[in-house]
Image 1 (cartoon, rainbow, N blue to C red):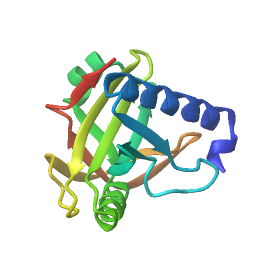
Image 2: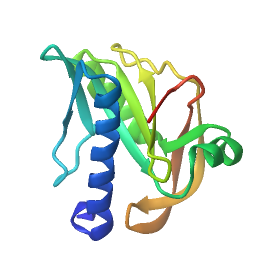
Image 3: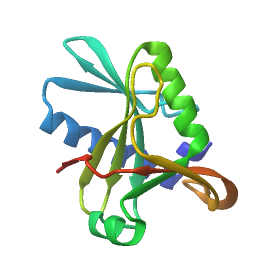
Length: 158
């Protein structure tokens, strides 16, 4: 399993850093992570006053900064389309909106944006395309349908 590798463990630690940034900026929320030793549709849940408020999809980016994300990627977050669909469906089943956390490790910067509402409807601007991407955190290549989420208007947190 990818999480058992050195790179996988680094991702877990960096994801935790991203959650700390969220909690520092929004102390009324608590981030509850899903187990990392097996596949999960979402990465975390946000609680406020002991009530689930949001489902969270999280990605850590190592190959870019916030500035290069804007200049080279047009502020679009590449994520597998299947992940968006499954995460939005699970969030809907829980009666929660889906929020995306995109963490730039070099900058220690977290972008947060609502991806879907509690009815499972995608609410951010998104396009899809078949592209070649890295298979997992440990490498490899695969051609699949990817979503490109427009992160314009996202919360920028440090």
